[in-house]
Image 1 (cartoon, rainbow over the protein chains, first blue to last red):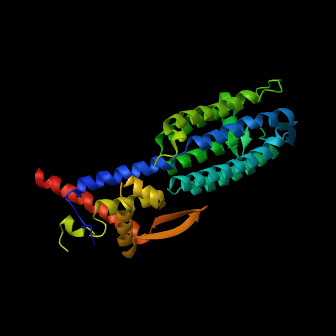
Image 2 (image 1 turned 135 degrees about the vertical axis):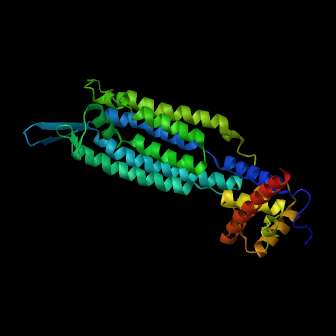
Image 3 (image 1 turned 90 degrees about the vertical axis):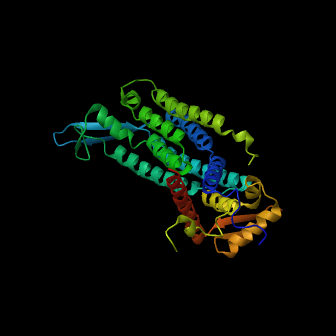
Length: 239
Length: 104
């Protein structure tokens, strides 16, 4: 062998420092956080015509006391979100794999994509169940929930939750505290009673859903721009 | 083997370039020859020598293929490679603690 096993440069501290520096460089090369955020922002904005132009559905239930409870919901939304999010994850997986091949480093995105699709399916089933079983007398699944609590619980079955929880998973995969902070802020806003209750407040406009979608999509887009400025995807040719 | 951490170091792994190869392969899961050559600032021949040593020791696997018309060589860590890397890092930390302890 021409190279000795250890040289004067191989002091333990130097070796550890080099190892950590290389690991950081690989992680930086693997990160493309801006892309999923852009895709989800676009999917959120693309939902606007779906909510606007497809007529809402109505499910009614009668309680024990004879009181009748009706729930207005977007049946198109129930179909749109699972399809849109699965397509989004397919795009994200394709992007990461192509980028990994181009840059010469592997990707750990598979776990994120699988988790995202599972969360999407769970959210889809929960949303369908919620629409078929409107809460009667401030009671949902035996839980005594009222007003804002009930709205927050119903909001948990929304697409924003599925997107947010999957983004937390991506933050773990990419070891990104920045994405953790962004996702926590995103979830705090989109699950806040003020945002969830707005379309439920009896507003007569056919655009009542719009502020919520603009807030959700806007937050994701701002996050995407911030990450793009940090990660500089236009310099992808560099190692 | 005595209790001194230097005795626990693996001669194959305890070297700047080879430790670098294992570290990059561990973080990347799969790494292309060109990326390794650039990030470790080596010539192709020098890198190939180190890869041969690690492959002979069963610490990495080397897969050759094509991306379009371009030949690509991908390096992955084996289970033994992951273990060797983890043990090397642990031994290095022990060694540093040992040196710091002697100096105090």
